Image (cartoon, rainbow, N blue to C red; front, side, top):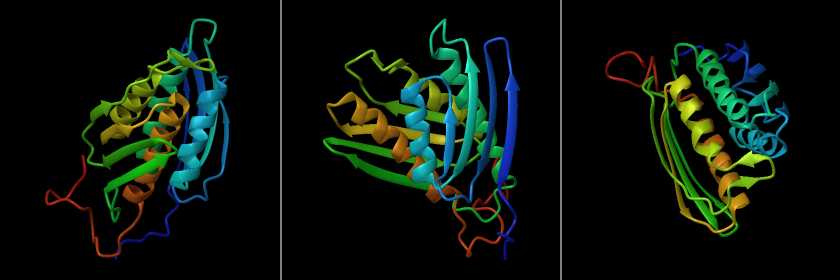
Length: 201
């Protein structure tokens, strides 16, 4: 039986000429978060990942927002992906697969993940505005691409219905959190890793 009493936590500090990021995560948390990226709407979205994924997540970002939000959002996705991967370690005992279909008023979002070690990202979502607050809606795609690439995820996101742009974005982030909660959870029947290869990479 897998020892599932080990703390699944990680801390990463990443500094570039464009962003300075400190982030820590506890996979087995209670959904508590302290988020500060300088982008109010983005903070709101990251809080949903923590809340619905039952991750404890602390994020502090200083980015070149005088340019635009691109570097801040993408780099936060890079660090989040690395943090999750590091916290999961050898991935022994986890379900590996997770999925959710989340309604957000008139919006309906599907998210499916496979913590396979291979990054494949498929995204099908349309926004009718360029920004929500000071967050560019095109950065939803770039954020999740960065998470998938740096965590080694097969990540599929598909908006099945929706008109309100805020609801669409929020549905996506909530659906991702719920799918990751499932995928990172333990199953006592899994004696090593859920793969015929004997490893997830």
